[in-house]
Length: 322
Image (cartoon, rainbow, N blue to C red; front, side, top):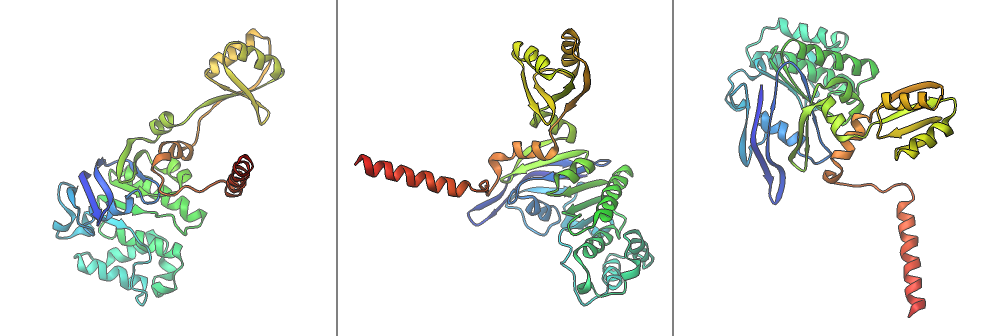
């Protein structure tokens, strides 16, 4: 497992990671989420001994990564898919990694086949697309058949088939009892892949919980119903102090369960054509929770022009008043 204990990192006056603590358990895919600048990559680099923490520690199976004699046998990681010697072939790159960690040559062929690189294994890495480089990085992470795997944005540059493959593969690895930590900005993909979430903002822990619990806690659910007489049911709902509004041909109800809406429709003798609970997506829940931790906020289209016009109008009123 991975243990992060009071991890802190300062770059000059900038506090990138702030007393961060969490565990990554085996047997599940853990999504590592946060806005840009939240400290995700810095945290992963400290776990792998690439950055030295200002305070705290990060352990893998109870040991700092830097003290491992054959780290590829214990931890596999993909942080930067393009951080590879471009003049080497994919096979030569993997062979060098294998030899440096005392791994058999046969393992290179196994991971090349496993990641779908067989036809391009002899090509130079500088000729690779980003998607191919991602597959090579994953192959390198798997070389030592490690029990702990860390991926930073692993689906970048992958086509739909590749995204489906890495999603299924990460779940397969976790199903074998391995520890899998994956960082991604694709919320829709994390909703399908991750069983557990660690969410950080401005270097601090915001959430450490299951994906389902995170969505339930940080998003608003609604009941949607399509009926034969929406005005009649809507009036009955609002008379009970319940919010009910027309949305895309449905009555969207807030504050009642599907059972309660169904019973009320029966009392009103209104035929129910569709009735279901609609929960917010992981993306909506993530945006709601991290709203105060986003480093940069973009305005809506036209917002800048509207603000400028408002300021000009206020200046004109002030001048007229003077």
